[in-house]
Length: 287
Image 1 (cartoon, one colour):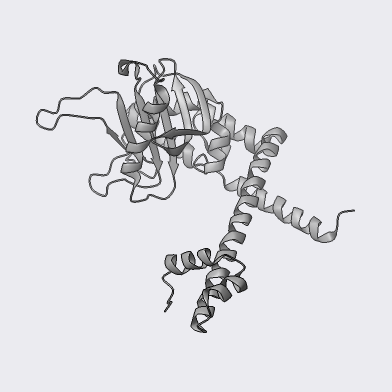
Image 2 (tube, rainbow, N blue to C red):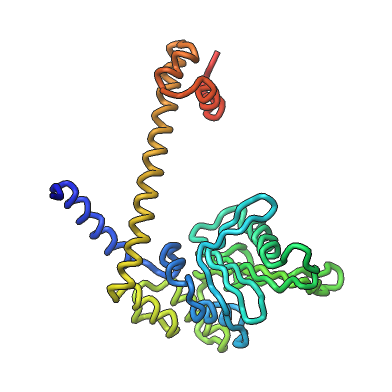
């Protein structure tokens, strides 16, 4: 028999999920990873519009793909490959951080490491594209919808043609009224990525996918499973942070009473070495 507390908890989770799902856009991390995973049509539309090339066709598309480069693990939000073998890493960044440019550089290297087998000639490297979808401009001056970078020689502006591309896309760019076809396509794409209502989405592949997830039982069920895993993960992280905060508070109070490290360790239920580390990491006064 399920008790009333458990029922109330489930009702709250279901209510929270419905509100969450209603607000989801393709820029919501969990929604986008679910929507794009295995969907080559979505990936094709995205890269064709962003690069203004209708010849590009995605052959594969995976969400949350992990790769190891230089002993550091990287997780690509969306990893796609086209029919020519070129790789596309699409990253969703709802908050612009100070390390975005260096991060893009590292992800480009990670793509190279992933694409080249051990012992293969460097000429087998395909082109790779690191695409950051941002909710704002990467640069404050000369704002543009897309900054597309390649390696060039400084004096004569000659392209190195090494196959590396880094794009920073400002999804909040304010378009004018008289636009050419390229800018119109970008405007519709940016709107679609930020839109939460399927009926207001322009591109068919994006509209159909949002309808599938939000308005069919199968789509909703799978999205709810993902939501619940995120909720539980966040709940566990919250408990860990509260435990850490409480440990710091206990150690700080014990230090004020001039208790020995051994006594503090006993009270905080951690080792003496862990007490020392907490003191060091949090700059607690210790004579």
